[in-house]
Length: 333
Image 1: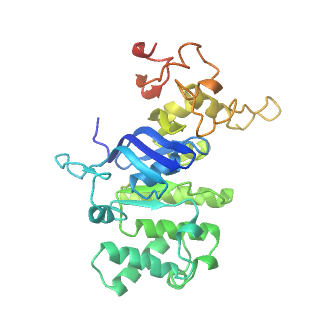
Image 2: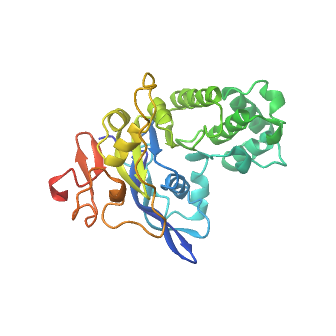
Image 3: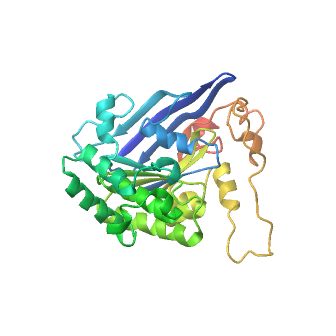
């Protein structure tokens, strides 16, 4: 198997609150292949965004990363990987933008409202590349044009509030890619956008991926988006990855009962009037009342009393996917 670009091992990020500890990310392990797209999917509150922010150590109090490894591999197989959780702040700042960049869910919350988008992109470029203001501005104009913003020489002096939602998202992507990172983490990049703009943003990411050869880690709750762009899919539930494998396998023949329920809940063309849309049974439990054993067992149609409620499943190989379920693997039976 080819060496991945990024490997997350047993990542644990907890929120230490007055009422107790919320284990938002509790043992996440996944890999991002070089030059390909990994989609991380799951219901709201399953820990997708916290996982993404933890990779760049962008979580703030009361959140705290309490364990695990995040290994960033070099271009050469012989290079020792960099553990981002153990890296010093100076080294981590070098990794951000130049090796790993992130597009956040809401551009208006990430862009400064009192600075032009050009000033913000130029600042990001000059923090990581030793070039002058004129050269940085020219690169910023180039990137704005490459992400499909019309008349970039004029738009570079626009403020975020002067742009539409789709244009702001494109500006964020331009900023993220201005230093040509090896990995782009996109956290719900199409949320609150209309269907046409959503399709344009996804096509843009795929085009830039092929052009720059970068990997993409896409955080989404939309299985349709994952099916459109992902090479691999990781399904998260209550802070852990329950299934991880090729997108074609996970989305067309899922193994974990939670993955199966998610896939069944997606509306399909041609089914109008034929059947009711299947919803995932039950609700996500409160953060302080996590079930024992398999965390999904109170909502699972394949629940086995005396097993699923007592035994924590480990991830095992089932065909070409990794799945954490007692239905698979002799050691889990």
